[in-house]
Image (tube, rainbow, N blue to C red; front, top):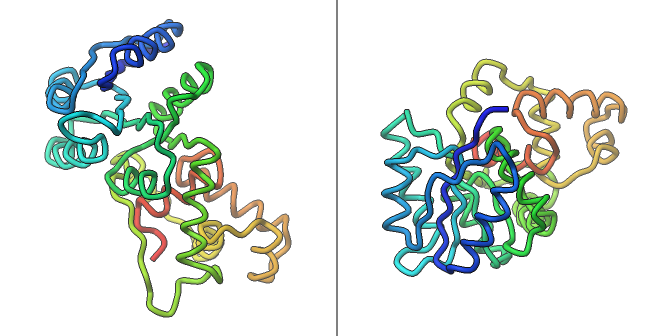
Amino acid sequence: MSEIKILVIEDHNLTRIGLRSALQTQPEFNIVGEAANAADGIKLLKTLKPDVATIDIGLPDMDGIELTRTFRQYQAENEDYTTKLLILTMQNSEQAVLAAFAAGADSYCMKDIETERLVEAVRTTHAGSSWIDPAIADLVLQQIRQDFPDGSRGASGKRVLIEGIDPDVEKSIVSYPLTHREMDVLELIVAGCDNAEIAKRLYLTVGTVKTHVRGILNKLCVADRTQAAVRALRAGLVP
């Protein structure tokens, strides 16, 4: 099993110790560094090049969202930096969640998460997929439904774009583009429609919709519909 190098950026000593202890239960997890503020966190991100960094939003010198945005800009200019960023916080407000993804976060977890779920979140994030707590996923989809209440693009052509898509995933999307029908299905997934509703709107059978959904998940390299919606927004696939 390949090693996963992890950097923990957290200003509370007890929380940082707890995170380290929880993550060190897995033999493939290697905690390569810890930082108690954003300035040190950015330095370690650049020097250690971890596979995954857990980032607290409430850092004393710069909040975790701004740290995420700053490092993503640095990554854009330095292609050999492939670190995935996992926001770990007590804030589950809609504003915080959407701001984190807009800044380029890969995953968003609550600090009261169980150890098993934290391990799952780190592994999923390292594999290139977003990991989102169910309650947080609901917040994201609620916002999406407000932007697209009828499941359409909207008369104004409003675009919701979340930046920060992984370069490898971007290459995959370019190499294996969604078909016109898959795009129709994806837009309705983003709008919060289930398979039955999608079938009704597109005059398809539910079985055909399921086939399209599987194709979408494979091409976007995600495990479920929520991750597909987030990745579609991040990649600007849904205008």
